[in-house]
Length: 488
Length: 75
Image 1 (spheres, rainbow over the protein chains, first blue to last red):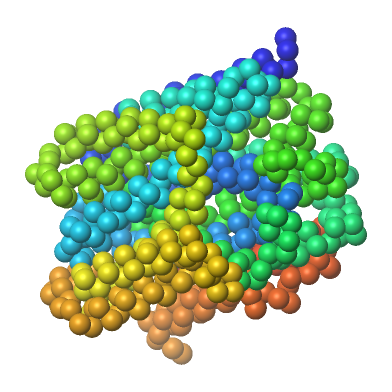
Image 2: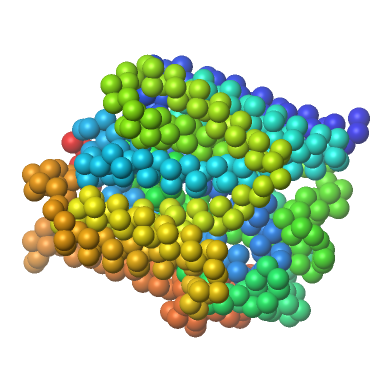
């Protein structure tokens, strides 16, 4: 039997397992929105732990991480750095958000903020912001999945068909099981990703250099510039400290605020579960270290691989590994793509219906109809992202760069919700819009970026300033209302 | 002997201070002394060891804080 058939069989077996787990997991939740979007607030520690780990580590971490280490050296350390502190704020504000969610029935991020500032406009702006951030991100995951299929079958399955197969499976289990499908498949995918990252990350340096130590010893002698932050840029020059540090800062600030991620707070069974998932998060995060080892292993032994993201498949195919092992790697890369993609599809549909359509047009929408509408949107959003991933020639990469800056702009809204009693509706809304405008402007006019600092940081400065100034000149919500949030 | 409540407040402040330090230690200029290849520690360059050590220490700090605070606050 040809190797590619074995590899494909292993990959399809993984997809079948994901489908079975995804379909089986949705049987016990209630029929309404609270069941479909928040899993009836019943997730226990282990599942939540894997949801938090797997939904943030995407195809970018699994393929892009080694690619960065291979081509840009220590600049890849920024990926490891921001997660070190990015999750920690959840430890304090997560239980407050969860408590308010149980009390007022929130299932999305915007519901909390819109209630706090009594603003339908804020809900709509956040819904649009979420969609702008999600679709390019989702598109990238689909392309990653298609690329994996294309590689494992040596070009026999085109990218469009590969993306369709993987995301067909995602569509079925998200449509059927909602967040429980996302949660249980993320558990399976998380175990898979972690196991493969550690096995490959330790095996490849051993096979190519005799161990991790000898590998870095060789690199320290021959390419020391690859091991010192801030590392290199994509074009091979030295990355600036401003660029490196601000990339860490903006990603750390936005990390826990991604709306699809934030929503998982509402799924936790209780506050202890939530806090302990945050405490143990670094044990997942540390799997990025062996992921980076893979990229470093390629620098001296496989020079000149382009694109750099192909370094892992290139090493694997050149080592004559058993086909089953290569198949498991492909399943791991698919797991990374799907575990992020499913959460994005689910969240995008939920946010559009719950924070957009319901708030603006149908406040009386009953939970069963609302869930039906979310399911329809799951199909529509998957189709739109698929179109951009494999049909359209329009690149969404520019939007992806914007999205990280946009998500960071939610941080002042969160601060105002829990710590700023004087903050007004007009203040947060105008701050948010001003911050996002700065991010857009600086992305399109990079020459205006002082010291190479990320547009999101400048946006945050303007956002906070406008929030404070406008709030001073406008009336805050009533004291009694504000206290419900400050004292939650 | 400080009161339990003030001990709790001190622990809160220490934990917050640790994470502020951990964040600053990852970026310019605090990370500058760690931005070097040698010595290799546990086989990895010092720059990578520094980040991994901050991650590990942050895990321990939050774990101890969570275990010591005890009880639950679900309402």
